[in-house]
Length: 128
Image (cartoon, rainbow, N blue to C red; front, top):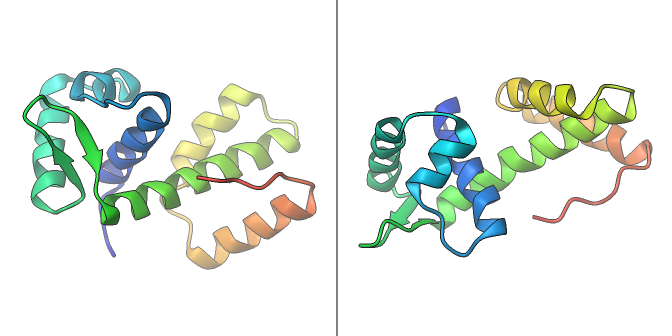
């Protein structure tokens, strides 16, 4: 399943916001990703057309199954990468920023090995 990095970022943001609130709106996504509201509107239109999200008449955004699968995969990568970077001494803020840069481009094989290393280093289970 091939999807653009920016779409992955939007899906991950929706997942993260939905963990904090039962209603996710475009304005929340724009604030989290530090992008313009028109950019979010355009992205939501494309994600909706491709079956990744649903939006109700009030503008509440919901991940559909195929969107949730991608969002969880990317968010797990983000969490594992940032935590392993912190474990080796990188500051929390830098680890989060660097994880964002790397999470999209790693192969499954490489990420699986990094995840194994994370658990060998005593990393806790990540439940999404």
